[in-house]
Image (cartoon, rainbow, N blue to C red; front, side, top):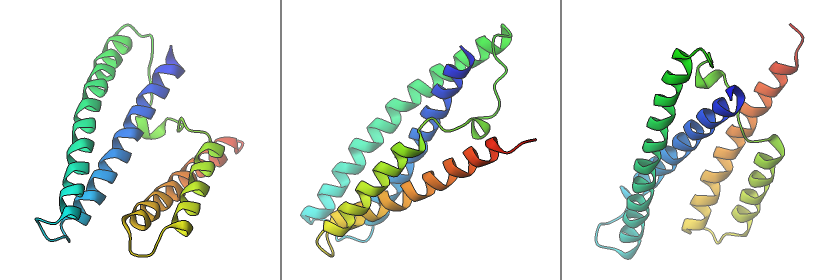
Length: 143
């Protein structure tokens, strides 16, 4: 129960942070557009859809938080803070997505939304890979 529960907590938290970062990026891009244009409307719709997904994800986070209290009180688990839990995604998965984002960036026409999206994905995945690799390296070091 312990490791699976920790993985659920970590995964849910990581997904929430990724979604919130994507939401922030979309909203920041929308702020630079002229209202009333098709592109402004498209970004507003994307923000709306993603915000609904984030809201729905909070239900899962609440469920896990309540479950963690029950498990801890029953002394079934004593988990560390989420930041100290190892990432759920394996390095090769992150690396594959990073490479794909790089390919999309190279293939995208300059000045398009695809460039901005691929660039944002590339940077996010680079950071995720660096953090996961650092954590994996530090866990492999002898005490």
